[in-house]
Image (tube, rainbow, N blue to C red):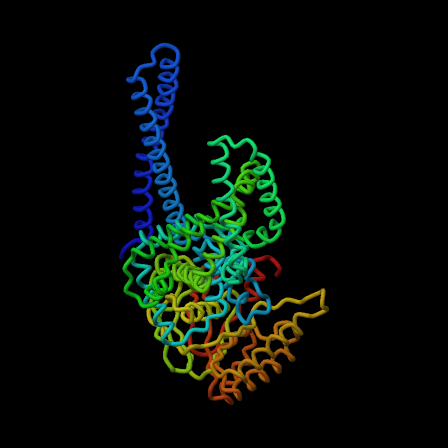
Length: 596
């Protein structure tokens, strides 16, 4: 069996060796640059103070060229060092996932937490110690939202899920490629303004509708500069006043149009990401030969009808560079006085949008989808004993050796699941594994519906919609008790089961917030209603009397978790068994704590 940790450590070791070698070169070239600069200054000094000879001029030219080459090489070494450091960091995070230290990752997807979501909080999909925190490798706004959407709102057909599975499998096979791709995405960064920028980029509204006025504003500066040149060359002193008038009029044109040009090009002025980093991503994707249909589609979306995303980003970067002149007030004033610079930038941006606006949203969404697929590929890299589930019409879910993907590989306990047109009542003592089992089933179904791998030897399921009632808390602000909050959640489950026959419910410790008599009666009523609606799902309980429903409802089946005792210690094997529980441990646990 291949040790996953060894694979990542091998990459880290290789990149550390490369980084050390490049660091030595980087320092050496740094000293060389200093030496060349001193030589350059000294040669200029000697030439101007002692010998004005052709040899010194040639020497100065050679030193200048060597300095330029040294600066370029030095910068490239810096990029290589940063790349190695980035790849090391990415693989260190994979090792953290393997060793259980992923809970220290800062990004928990907090902005995606929805307390009213059908399953997001109950199954730990987002938030602290969540699936998002575990396998998230996204770095851009669109990537993060695509990944969160795939986890919380997957709406893929059976065929689409299969295509996504093929894409995830292809990405997971090449750790070098995915690491490089993630590194380049990390240079872009997550900026909430990215969404607003795309909205502005795809807006095809023209800056100036009157073509004649645009032509005049384009050529007037050229005419004035040409006229100024003639005046200076031929010393037409009598026309200097006219030049002053022309430049003043041009300045007035700039000031009059300043509010309009600012509004039009402000999105370029505040570009929330580094366009060069996007270019690196696009270049890498473009040159890669994919076999999975989903990846080929992403690749084709980035080059539509001979319109290249890479070329568009390069052109947009040039416009952004021109607009950035605003950051230098003196130069900004001069170029607008001479060239009506703001108008020229606006016209360039208008031309860019006329050519690329219909496609740019698709580019960003496609790159976001690619980042999301990288996350699901990460699951296959760090979780042992995974498989791609079969999506069929079995009307439920079946799996062998299914485990919770976020539990470390070496301590994970696996179980079976067979839930076809059934309601499972799972009984058992405290801490025996009932709740974890529900989350194990739920999380693996979430992964399956998004086209990812599942933590199981085999798995087959329908395209199910999950709804849960697990983490229930009172709300003091709204005056809602725990019991009433759970009633509301149960009502949502009943409504979902009534309107969607592909619903799978997971209810943990049903009606824990009320007395034992009401709890038992209420639980029987709910399960009876769910049975009438032909819903499938699982309910955990401490009330063993609830297990007697198996005698009156044929679709109900009993399963249990148990414990055993050895040398006055309690042990759990976390294995599910058929039938209802025959053990309790509350009294024993109270003895251990010292209550009794």
